[in-house]
Image 1 (cartoon, rainbow, N blue to C red):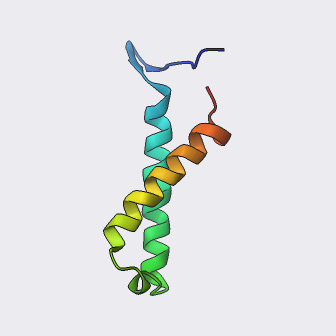
Image 2: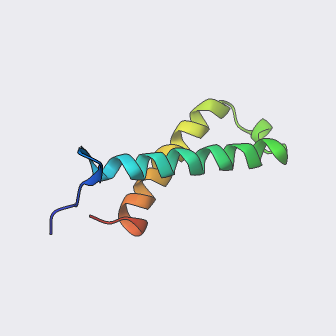
Image 3: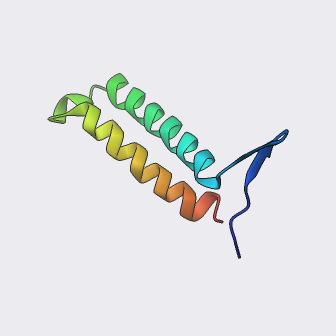
Length: 68
């Protein structure tokens, strides 16, 4: 089964775009929670942790939440 494109009006978007937007939003929320509870101070490079979380969440959303 092929993945379905998302379309808004006459513009088609790849399905990975929605996964990436959800992954970035989830990573942003996780980063905010880590900062709120002062857990980000234990990381050597917090911005790299945010990027890694965005990649992990994007992969999880593409496999489990919005499979193609």
